[in-house]
Length: 125
View 1 (cartoon, rainbow, N blue to C red):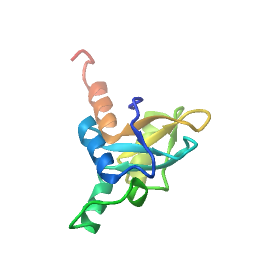
View 2: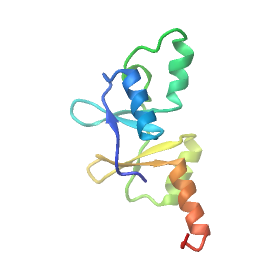
View 3: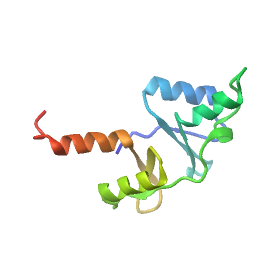
């Protein structure tokens, strides 16, 4: 999982969020409310909605497009259980919650692929 989390608020301009995704080369942003609680997730997939609903101009804020009903996985979950949850729920990004329900990481399908590749190799490459 990635622990170097990039966060925005629901009031962040959607164009700024797009710039962050592109500049940082990531596929998702954690959306935190004013109390630093998880409010949602904005993924590169969510930008399909941005483009399809605003053909002439891309305006609005993250809160207009983010996924609000966010699935999480506890940091104590096994990699297998996290992968099963991602497959069953058809999500590419899964926030990881610590003991106090704070978000401590983000697990992506890319992370899972990298781990499985490493486990299948000698681990020396």
